[in-house]
Image (cartoon, rainbow, N blue to C red; front, top):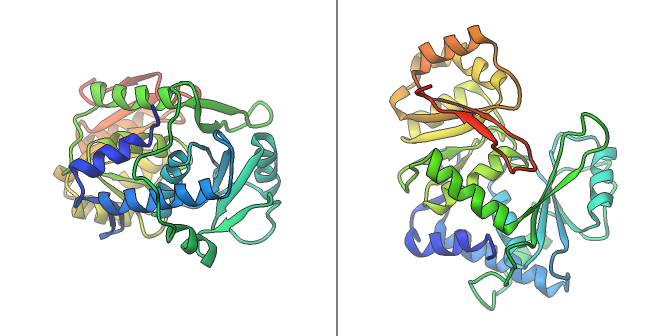
Length: 308
């Protein structure tokens, strides 16, 4: 029940469809993303890591995020995505806490690193992607095997790694599609919020259905850039904190928004002021999904759909 089968199956149905985009440019089709993930998984297997070993991912939002997640799962390993804005001491704590065997990063300087560090902009990473995979199917995994260590924000102490299994991720994905969908190959999921957290988890539902996964060129949230991406990609949706929604709605760039292209904004992580919510509903119409959850569930416990 390896969650990486989500990608393997999608690549059969949507081989030539855009899987990963950077801004308006398609970086990888689904067939290409599968090949790169399988190659990376083979390279990790060749290093001799035991099944279930932890793979630290300390990256800003960028296209490589997807192939690293699936590459680790292809190898039968567990990912530990880490917020790229954390202090080096916080990073060091998480890497030590989860006993990471390898770290993928694009952040230089001041890192307390484990023995195996892979710079995603370096030659070692390119060499891993050149590995010839023995199979385009992921390694076997039991439903209860760990797949994702979701580190909490640590507001009441040190961050804690919530152990999400392959079954957890699969059931979360199916629940999203049952309650929040539909999603299909003509849609697009935008990632202005960190892929290390809720936005990354929600990506699985869009990958299942062959949607485009779009990383902003800025790697983060810029209202004008998000408006441009929504105008470029019909059927767009994205996860946002309430402050991001408010910044978008109050931005001068809203005058250029083709609002019909916006499917949903999933917002959560903090309360939204009533007046801000009213302003957003006037500007965007009934396109706001309010989500309440936590990393352990994973992601969503309860929600209010747009019509409510």
